[in-house]
Image (cartoon, rainbow, N blue to C red; front, side, top):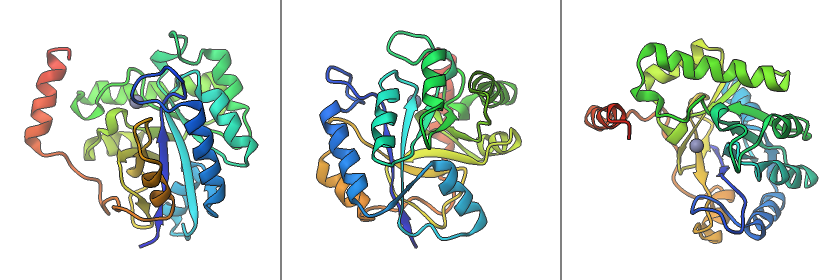
Length: 244
Ligand SMILES: [Zn+2]
């Protein structure tokens, strides 16, 4: 199988939470991606090749989740090194403190090579929602983002990585062509384009781990979307009802 590293970042801050990386760490990762010898592509471009059966040899992708305001300068920094990126935006976070506002989103959409994707409306576990609520999360987020950026949105990243067959059917029915999971594994040529594996990079991630990942070393994502055990989903559904 041909492995494809897809990196996942959240905020890029000096004083951010545990999910973020520092600007210095981020610059080092930009350098590593550029030096990897791989061809950087958006998740949309990777998914297109997965769907058509074209070769994914030598590709790499960089993505961001949530729509943190720091992702605009981070995407610009990547673009300056010739690296396109995919930013998955949570619609309800737009305009919140620390997140992109509508103007920031439009600026982001204008960064060369950028892909804007959906990260749902409310950042909820999609696999525990009713059919109607699931449909709303995937369709409304897409429409809201397309309205704001004036361009098509064809990718989604599942909040918390949570997805199952029902979520894939809803996403496919809503017209999405790519779906980004987490899994902390390498994507590969036999992966489902609606369930692309990524590696979360935080301030605690050892650089050597990212270097190995960019080298195509590590666990591969599964050839079919992993389905949570029923027991785990029932547990999370109960938590969801309790408003946790
Ligand atoms: Zn998220």
